Image (spheres, rainbow, N blue to C red):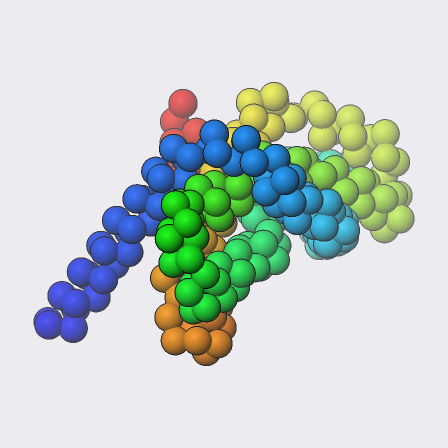
Length: 253
């Protein structure tokens, strides 16, 4: 029981610290907008340097979904409906798996960068110069992730759907025109907005989780490695939990 009680207190304390960091980072968004160089650097890191891996990942997600989904549909003579796999990409696979990629690449980098500054006492140096670390480090990263996650998700969705259409033609002899006809027939605009809304939240989760683990790093180089690993693990878990509750909320609207 004492161990359980201590764990519960630790979780509650961490949740409070994460909420406080989120509020402070959002409150200092204006600072990030004024410091264009800081913001553009993070936009470049999140967006431009993630395009290749996100595009390749999305392409193969589309190929794999059509490969396995088409095999099952073909057994029932319904391969013409293979375009419905595009809906699965829009609903879940695009936003969630893109968030996983960004969490592994960007979230871990945030934890490592800020964690290194923390153990080297650079965070305290910023405070001594009258600079708020949350405004200087967290706000530009949060804003960059929130702004560009929808773009990356849309890019991944496009690559996945094009790849799926190509695989449908190659393996099932379903013409791309038929693939896209079925896809757009059942696609609703609100489903796309739901997907992009989730991606915005995922971007915030990734940025805040990475920054939080960076700011709480202790123990030198070993601590930086531990914070980086925990950042990725906690980001992935948070994305799945948030995805569930957002899905429940959006479906109820």
